[in-house]
Length: 159
Image (spheres, rainbow, N blue to C red):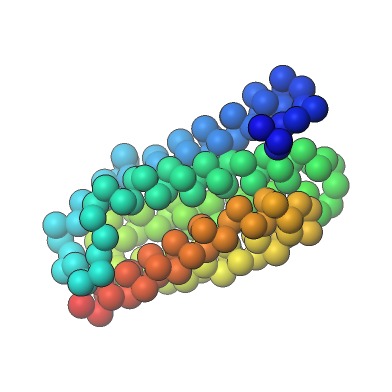
């Protein structure tokens, strides 16, 4: 694995820990608040239910890898700290969306959260790019998925 070539066992453990940690934090709201869609009117382009956990697992894995790439540039460096802050902001918004949309069954408020998340992801990509271009590039699928999810959220809200 070229990302870890010449790296220590500690780096490998940190990378695995970041990937697992991001996946656990990201998946927790669905387990705590549910993600049932029987209360919504599904637009014609609503994907099969199985797509969501598969895509989110992949995206959270890419987030964890990106976070590791940024971390290994030196957590004491100012650009790395800024990247961590932007990561934290987008993660809070990501985690917040599920209880708002599914828990409260409020697609209107969910739309506000997901649009704020979209902006935060763009900010994170910019901050990651200043530290490690690969870390930023790994977040493009996340931005694309959240763009699609925003359109889906809007269609549910207006449907």
